[in-house]
Length: 85
Image (cartoon, rainbow, N blue to C red; front, side):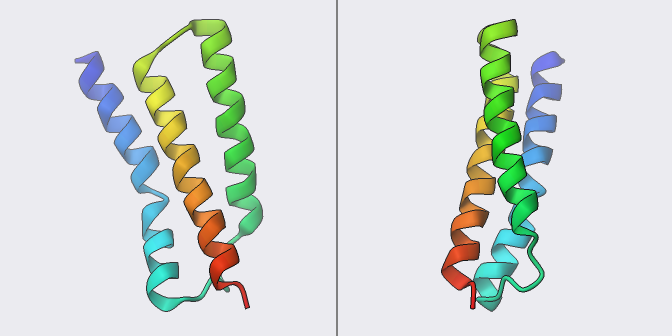
């Protein structure tokens, strides 16, 4: 049950970024994107990864959540700079 819940929360955290990423790529517009949100997310995810490793140790679902969320935020930042006018 705990692994299932870990999968669900990891999936939800990661998927919440992708509609904005897909919309920005399709429209080639990032006018409505808050860059600061994604930059702060990257900093937060990196801090969470370090904290989890130092304080808790290797917890697959926590680390998977943070790494995938950080990756999604990085993709959005790259998309932002690619389509910024």
